[in-house]
View (cartoon, rainbow, N blue to C red):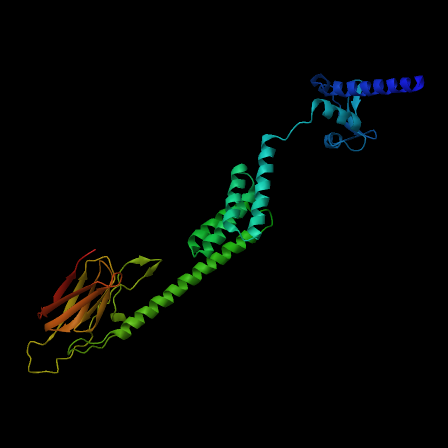
Length: 322
């Protein structure tokens, strides 16, 4: 029993000496004697000693610190915690990971919100920023907002990791979709112009030879296209009325002045006359004399009606209202 007590006392004393040695090297004064990190007699990067590998350690003055010593020192003095910047990145990465799981589950709105939180937690986290703008681009594209989607993905591209081209591929796809939309708009415009030309027929007893160039266009810009709002009919040839006995039944024109904010379809004597958008005009070839006019708003279906006597010099029919 006496031998056991002696052994225990020796162990405690040895442990105390090791602890004192570690505490001594951790004191700020000891740092002034730091000579470097050594493993097996060779100096190596400090990170190997800080990580506790290879039996190396800090040496200075008459003291030293190996793996066991470093552990005791951390136990007594406490290991340093992460820096504020590292804490912010850790939180941002955690939010980013949660957002990505929601993305693959198809919960895009919730994923977008968490990606945004990850950006707020650490604005320098390129992964979170890139995925946020890429997902927003997808959602805007799915909603049909191609122009906004293009703006989104352009903001994602600078955050791409080296060698990653996914954002560039998405940008190219959106640009192609926009180009296809513009091409389709041009086709639809041309088709609408031709359809309108096909619907035009002479009013009264006048006859006309119309060409596609006789249909005027309003100068309203819409996505880079000149959109047909009104048909200004320019007769190429006007025959005299069949009824030679009616001296007053010569050709003339009816000008419709659309002062409303709506698209309006005008008819004369029950036949198609012209279409005119709000704030534009259209001209209809008619014969001199009495005509029944009717105009219908495209937005509300409200109708304007008027019976007029069109003189030889023509007549202007104003349409007013909101």
